[in-house]
Amino acid sequence: MIRTRFAPSPTGFLHIGGARTALFSWAFARHHRGVFVLRVEDTDVARSTPEAVQAILDGMNWLGLAHDEGPFYQMQRMDRYQAALKSMLASGAAYLCYTTPEELERVREEQRAGGLKPRYDGAWRPEPGKILPTPPAGVLPVVRFRNPSAGVVAWDDLVKGRIEIANAELDDLVIARADGTPTYNFCVVVDDWEMGITHVIRGDDHVNNTPRQINIFKALGAQVPLYAHLSMILGDDGQKLSKRHGAVSVMQYDDAGYLPEAVLNYLARLGWSHGDDEVFSMQQFCAWFDLEHITPSAAQFNTEKLNWLNAHYLKLADNDRLAALVRPRLEARRVTLTHTPSLAAIIDLYKVRVSNLNELADAAEVFYIDLHPKADILAQHLTPEALPALADFIDGMHDVAWEAPAINALIKTCIGKHGLKMPRLAMPLRVLLTGQVQTPSVDAVITLFPRELALKRLTAATKN
Ligand code: GLU
Image (cartoon, rainbow, N blue to C red):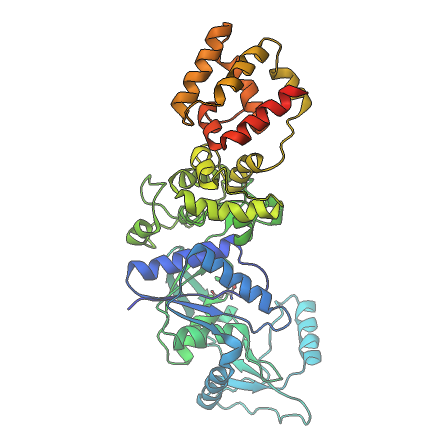
């Protein structure tokens, strides 16, 4: 049974890179009909906040990445870490170290002065035949992991290939602080072990922790999971993704008007491929997803492609669903939504022309507000030769059938009568009705309005 986990630290929002890690872990579990665990790594009490926990849950929820187990909170698992510490001290896999921070600093100074890499000198590390110093009174010890001193620690990373580190490179890690609290690398191991994680899929900023974690797994007598370290995501400009690049939090993509399915589809292709396939559902993704096709090189963000995917999914989306997503955006702009024109009908006409929900809101807004087309645009399109045709059109509108073909026929009659080309009348109609020069087919736009409102807009501007 495959078991994966997503283990964010709640110190900020859900980062787009974190979302990709979560997506891959989730998809791998789904592909194998396994279990996806959500674990909140909140032991950094100074930086963890309830708001950040909520932001992670909101982000996961928005993306629809449902966990099968959890969320587990590390702060609620302290007894588990204490039990593991106890057993490691008992087995000799860990030991008490009374070196004070000041002493440690002195040792490091000496090492640096001697041109050595600063590291714990092993003063309290038990060795066969070694006589340990007497614990000093009044000093609370830390617990250190007794890292193997010889050999290598190696793993076949499922993305990066084989990685080997000499144990001599690793000093004895502190696994519990003087106040008894367990440290980060230790909690991760205890959790991955007890939660039965088979595949650790995480960002490659953790590669350096892995050899230490593997050694602790072995000391616990636990099965070492398989590791897949995902390369980082670069911004459009090839630099490390940061706030400079705009949206980095998942919920900012919601604010910016992206649909979750577009973001998911986009993230799925960020460092993973299935031939040339670009557009696919999450169901399809889970069926295809494997670790073999994850690229070890960094993936570069491409906002244009994300926008293209978003436009694609907007076209496919149900009008009522989009209306429910656009409505709060209009309300946030204090636009009062009257019953008519129907938001879903506006969306149906405009969704093929926009690339995000905010553009859809822009398009819809003009139908509901008290519209005052800009004077220069009016002057440009409401030409003297257009006015008589417009007047005829307004006359005809009182009893024309309220449907696009009939309105289209009316427009043609009016331009025919005055010897005008289509845009001569269509442009002033667009501008008067929506304030905009670019709209979908004008007859279709007109039918979105209730007859009275269309007449009001057309006559109001022609009067002054
Ligand atoms: N809590 C870690 C982070 O947010 C992830 C740890 C892990 O995946 O092993 O970066």
